[in-house]
Length: 96
Figure 1 (cartoon, rainbow, N blue to C red):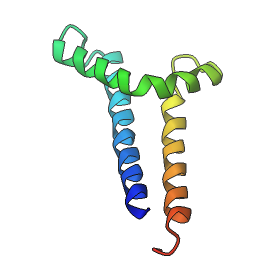
Figure 2 (cartoon, one colour):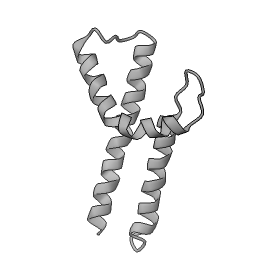
Figure 3 (cartoon, helix red, strand yellow):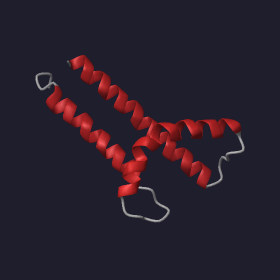
């Protein structure tokens, strides 16, 4: 059972970094550091959006409109921390 929890925690860590990368790329595009005319940037953006939008879109739909600031990645990152802490504290309590 501990191995299953370890795999889930590792997958959540990977998804954490995917969300961070997506946010950084969106900032780089917004500040014109990179642009979509570069095919590599376009492909990376397409991949990151395909990985993050299924989770971010429902949260974004339920949150109030804050203008240009998107707070849904912060909500997802806090959710990932919560799930990881629940797994660590209650998933295998005899370890710690």
